[in-house]
Amino acid sequence: MPQLRTPYYLIDEAALLKNLKIIRQIREMSGAKSVLALKCFSTWCVFDLMRDHMDGTTSSSLYEAKLGHEKFGKEVHAYSVAYSALEIEEVREFADKVIFNSYSQLNTFHNRVSHLKVGLRVNPGVSYSHFDLADPARRYSRLGVSSAEELNAAAELISGVMFHFNCENDDLENLSAAIDQIGKKYGAFLEKMQWVSFGGGIYFTKDGYPVEKFCKLLKSFSEKFQVQVYLEPGEASITGSAELVTTVLDMIHNEIDVAIVDASVEAHMLDHLIYHTNPRTNSPGDGTHKVMIAGRTCLAGDIFGTYDLEAPLKVGDEVRFADAAGYTMVKKNWFNGVAMPSIAVRRLDGTEELIRSFDYNDYLSSLS
Image (cartoon, rainbow, N blue to C red; front, side, top):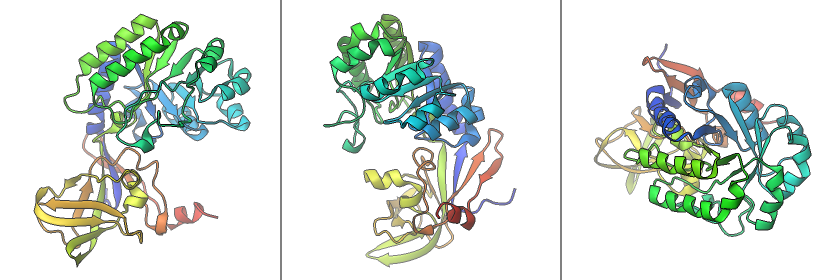
């Protein structure tokens, strides 16, 4: 295969498999099933590998649910903050579980999906998030039912509930306390359910995470309430498994050296811009040469970050940004008409395969 042209996302199946083996281990030790959160990662060219270790997919929209059904198979959990009547008519044809965000939507559409396993999202009032923007229990949250009256009214209409209350939670002690609180608060209700989802945002693939203790926590909850526990890993399933590979196009100096690469934070790693974080670099390595690395759009704040690198950058150098799988390809956009990164995969045998490239016609067809 010809050398890949930057920019491109490179997914490494060997790194991906490391996470997937942990997911499989959790199921074997705890009985908890895992469904891939497509809102984080929907790049279906690696679904064949992921399918062997996961139980299906969970979605936040009709299109994601449909993608999960068509490209992943296995269980399809269809959740949406709000469904339209037309979306319900379509999703009811292929979903295994339909999960409603509110009692009003459950009450409105239940008769159309009663042949399926129906669920309801519950807001337990506890959460873990470093960012208010991503905190599902923030004040005035619209995410899930918090009313005990509505929850009790829903009991006869549903077979399970979803508690999605974490974002990048790597603290097992915190998670254990929250799950214990959920058990105490909703225990009588949970005994009427068949399944419970603890959502995503649990960073159980982080190096050093106490996986065995985590499994004991899940198994204990499952046995106590006689429910099937589900996890909805997004970033936990793909963390560390991809890079955004770029090339330096220009070097300028304005108090600090600034390298402009052929990609964009705004268009290609948008979460970093939203949350005011900076991606790590896999290459070049760390050192003492300070440089700001910037994107090529006209947005003044299109900045990847300021780095201390092993050598000064020059035009033509390659820069590889780490953790470029989650919330990147699902959010990439055509801002400024900047060329969209291709998608490539390094397969388990080490070969690199170009999966998809984008050109002017893709840009043109995205507009009208």
